[in-house]
Length: 108
Image (cartoon, rainbow, N blue to C red; front, top):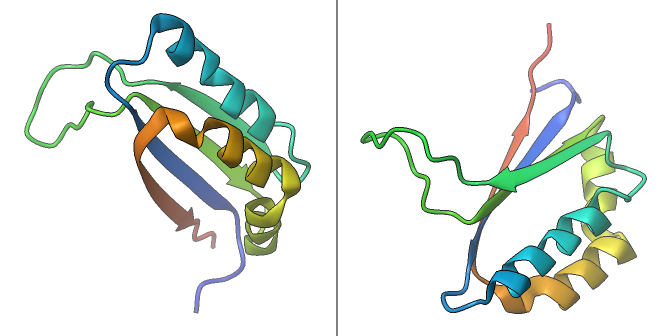
């Protein structure tokens, strides 16, 4: 059994084709809302990097975000937080695909 430790919530977003530059820029407001949630220990986001194409690299996404939570319970609280739910409702019109990777860190 994994000890209850920090949890990393990594989410990739593929925005809909045909969005204007203004709409793509406006999408950043989604992340600005999420980072205000009190259960979030740290938060950052960004665009796909223009790194070298290799077989193991996938830079096809538009944005990615990383949220760190002190505990699994903090992550669960984040999922039902009204700010999170309202942000999804407001900004989901911009994306066509979302992929979530949650990792609970193993600490000695």
